[in-house]
Image 1: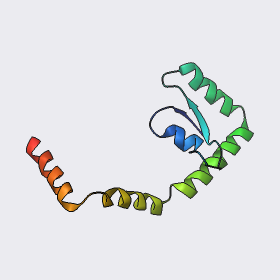
Image 2 (image 1 turned 30 degrees about the vertical axis):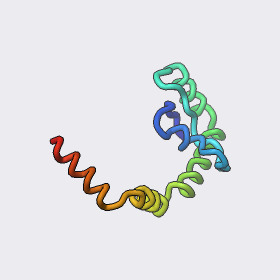
Image 3 (image 1 turned 180 degrees about the vertical axis):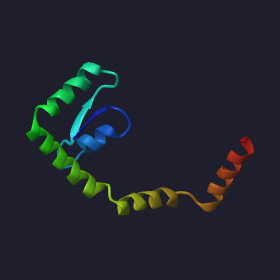
Image 4 (image 1 turned 45 degrees about the horizontal axis):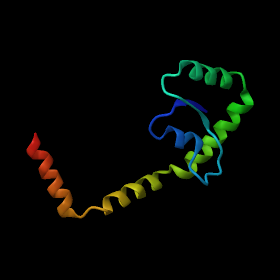
Length: 98
């Protein structure tokens, strides 16, 4: 299990998306809130059953949703949205700025 601040995709990774049945895999706290960060760490340190429950949920989420195959498919879908001419045009615009 992890303690994370609420930045980027951390909330989604630890709490899941809507319809995600895996459960919480950690604790998300506000950015720069040292009291809540330390409180979450102490909570996990003192509760082995909670650590186990969150760890199992995280392991299940990652092994199900974050596989190599799904990562590759995700990139394929992103790249399929661009035709070759658009990509080449954008690449040449970036080169001219250097």
